[in-house]
Amino acid sequence: MTTISAAVFHGAGQPIDVRSVELAPPGPHEVEVAIAAAGVCHSDLHLVRGEWEHRTPVVLGHEGSGVITSIGAGVTDVAVGDHVVLSWVPSCGECRYCKLGRVAQCKTSQEVIAAGGTLFDGTPRLSLDGENCFHYLGVSSYAERAIVPESGAIKVRSDAPLDVIAIVGCAVATGVGAVKSTAQVPAGATVAVIGCGGVGLSCIQGARMVGASRIVAVDLVPAKLDVAAQLGATDVVDGRSGDVVEQLAELVPEGLDFVFDAIGAIATTQQAIAALGIGGAAVVVGLPPAGQAARFDPLCLAEAEQRILGSNYGSCVPHRDIPDLVDRYMTGELDLDAMISARRPLSEAGAALDDLASGSVLRQLLLPNPGLL
Ligand SMILES: [Zn+2]
Ligand SMILES: [Zn+2]
Image 1: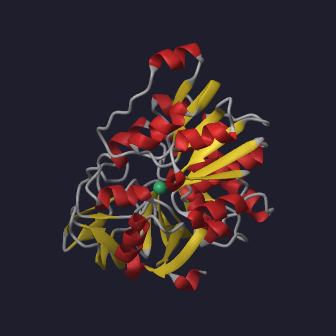
Image 2: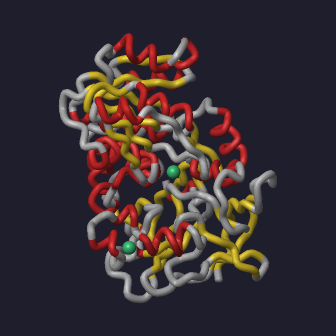
Image 3: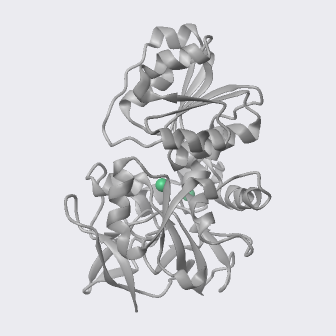
């Protein structure tokens, strides 16, 4: 057992508790990672707000990067000292979806890791005063160290800055993947992206990378629209200036080929569908609170041959896509630095989540081990 500092969530309405927890050594096909940086994402906020259920206590964080410090039996993909980006859908390699290549839909990962809050063997490596403490999406990166499944630790080149590339593991893989893998946006298409946080800005960069002809960024915060324009948006729509669908129709009168809802609120999903042109596709990328329903006009959908697509983790294949995205950052094709608005110590995890909830920040990084950078 090692004692580490970690940000623990005990239940909705209770403050984030940065405290000592115990970490057991890695089991078979598991690795221990010293966390260099952890991104602060809305999927952490969903738990904190009580919008998604999870076993507690749980160490938060599902986006991160670090260095392998120890490996369990049978680990062959990575070695001590390797730099890794963490994936929140570790894959079992054996279920129907893994065999189909849809590893972001790994059924074992969903049932055991996501729903159970444990690692693949159904038990956690974290404990708190001798009682079980759970993992969040097999990552729990708001901590000095994490034990993760081997398939969730993606080896990347060691010359990439460890803090910056943390955001590739959720926001960037999700946003770029939604454009390239889920929607397969072709060159010349017209695209709108609703919401310019980490995922939305990554959708914008994905659209720029595939050669979209128009990229319209939509947000309520002018500073975020400025960053969107810097990252490739050709037009911006301030949602406070009037109806979003009408503003989009003024810019692209025939309707859009693709609209990405990077917020995942009912209103934004409905806007995404309503703004489509003939043959257009609305892509739901941001994850809404559980148990909601959105409305659309099925006659319009049929007549205009439109589509509604769901995108989980950008349909990504982490071992293929994460190293590729890091390479694209290193060559300058992908701008990650502009998406990061703050670097904070682990002790400020609660304040960082509060700032995310305020809607005014881009990606914030928690740095549990500044010595690794
Ligand atoms: Zn996330
Ligand atoms: Zn699987």
